[in-house]
Length: 345
Image (cartoon, rainbow, N blue to C red; front, side, top):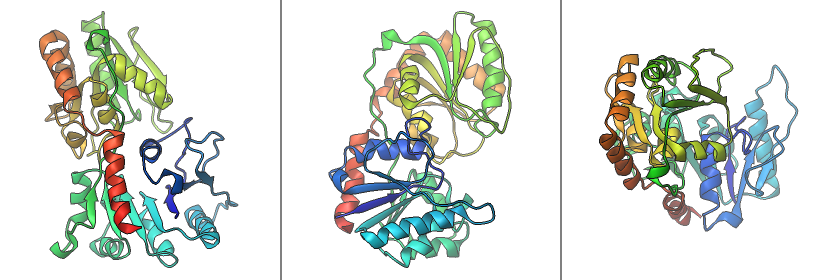
């Protein structure tokens, strides 16, 4: 038996620069009853890989040729050697047509808004995906609703399923939480970093015994915020980020655009942070009990952080409520994934 998982081209399946998709797969594959039958395929320049059962698809890259097409072709060359019983494609609907010609037992995962993705934007393109897959998985109900916009009800069946991302529930002691406000993510306008940055400077000016930690990078944008109590750590490995979630009192996730789900909100919830989120997209599903911003402004972010700092009882209550209701563990989600595999293999 062989289950092949095809990553998006350029997804780094490595501890050195792992994205949300790689972290999700690494966590759930380890707990799958099919783990010995799973092979992950991807393309990365990093030497270290998250799992041993990984194949790096190497091919010659040309400036004027589609590297994604060459990547899929290389995967199909591997399929000629040993055909898969099931192929799971993550976040690349554009791969479906080519692979369907060789193997019709396909599961497609959406980790982003389908309406923003190549060959999934129109109703006809999404119907094509429906017809050429055994199952389509969405990381949130919001992402599922985006996919079904404009589709006839006959396409809204149990072939479409929501399986959220997951993480481990951290072992924490609320007494060990420090006066730290944490921001994790891309340091760009889309993630609301400019709003957070302006708000946090005002907060730190008013509460000098508090500190702010920012983890992430963004080479395409530059937003400069400086304060003696603000540290910007850049990109960090997941195990380092986890330690910051465990020790931080407050976490802020404030994107301008609707998040398909929200890995950062998930991690903050699993570590019992008092979490502030934009009330958009799938973030509510990642942390149903979080403090929600009805309107995303510098003033509202600043006001929400200050409320948590001033009202210690409210902050502690929020932390415990978020932590208590966290249920999206790796074990729970891995079992959900295996249940559909049981029916398809």
